[in-house]
Length: 229
Image (cartoon, rainbow, N blue to C red; front, side, top):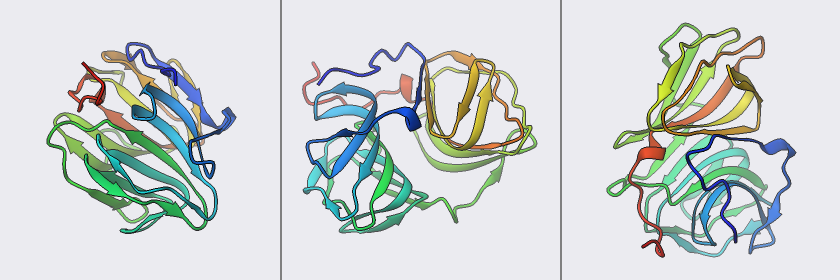
């Protein structure tokens, strides 16, 4: 399988609502591959869709797995995770996932640092929000480890943030509304990956926006893939 958006020095913008789902090795599970380094064992970011009644064989996540449930209910032997659930399954954990109703997930594989071993289960529908750095901004911290931070950020309409730089890079998935910066406009479903030391001046207009944001990971020391030299 060829690498996808594997040059992390480049900015990438993908409009996932316009991209087709591709069948995975399990025909009940389809995916949109956003970035990927490796074959079936890969450092990867994807949108994954489980058909109703689908199951996936038990497997181990050697490099860890991060999931945000976007639609439906995702399940495994440990529980049921409705839309809005944020999960982190640390390296070497295993499970046998399934979905009775069908679901759509945002999934990141093999993107944990050494020592990041704490499982995380957050229901973002009830998890607390905190005031952001400017008026109109609210932040829900989801995870932080060794300089890598993951959060949901809610932007009220007509919110303006100061121009700033991301030394460790930034990744955004727009969950609702429309997110803007000085480089473009990004409706719900847009995925952006901006390289280390990139700069922008983000804002919202009348729609406001809610976004998933990860920072610091493009400069982080991640667990190596098995075939890495």
